Length: 371
Image (cartoon, rainbow, N blue to C red):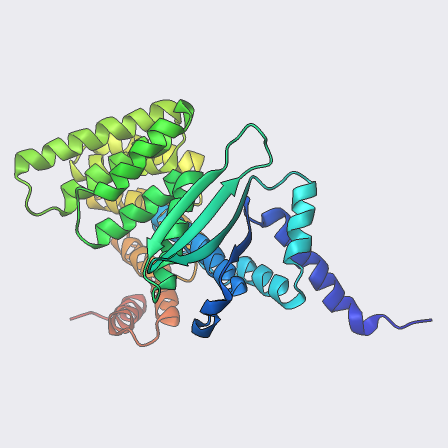
């Protein structure tokens, strides 16, 4: 009888990764980007170009997700493991073939790099298996010594055709970082979205546009008070329009809560934050901004409820525990305050503010007068 003990764990692991790749994989398959053999001197083969395009599309999606969530998305988890498995065992074609049989792939991409007349071009073809849908041809021209830039531009145009909302998020992030509060590239992509996507999906970009006007009102120092109020009014109109189509859309709910909190319209802000928590109870940002607004009003017991939820959602965040310690102290719950402060110090043991806070609360717990 054969002993399978040596192979059991690797085999199970491989099977699990295969299933993850099969069912978690993207709706896009990049078949191959052909590169002339003359370019191999620069390190660019067809395999390298295909992988570069795949990586660019993934990075654009990660950047968009990060912008949408307001947090950094970890690229090092399951997705990275899937890629390593595919590369090591060279089963990418098998996985994609299986997905294809099951009808799980929507878009296919192939293309080539050509050189003529001193120009280097990346030509990409995007198609589906539906005969009635035309092939989309994308052509990007660039410099022969900037293949990375050429592939990046091709990836942006490809994704703009497949999912303009993702590219709009990417452009907004880039333009916001540059301080360009008119968001020209983002608005151009939004225009394409409104023209090409079904009306029932327009709530996505109404929410995005509302956020853009809100950011401009908050950050553009050149605005007059009247212009700032006009930006906020436009933001509110767009965000409310988004919610008319999709009442549980999280981001307009949060943004309307933030705008109203900033204007001291606390009752309205409360209503929006409550709706956001009801639809997405484990979204951290809602809990902290709602908690901060409640604390601003002196409603410390209510603020504690939100920050306790935040600590449950993200138990390794020292700042959340420090804020919770402050709230407990304000309500006379010194033992709980000391416990939360100690947790913050445990997470960041060299932070002097946390060290001082624990000492202060130790003294209060012992009944020692604090100078």
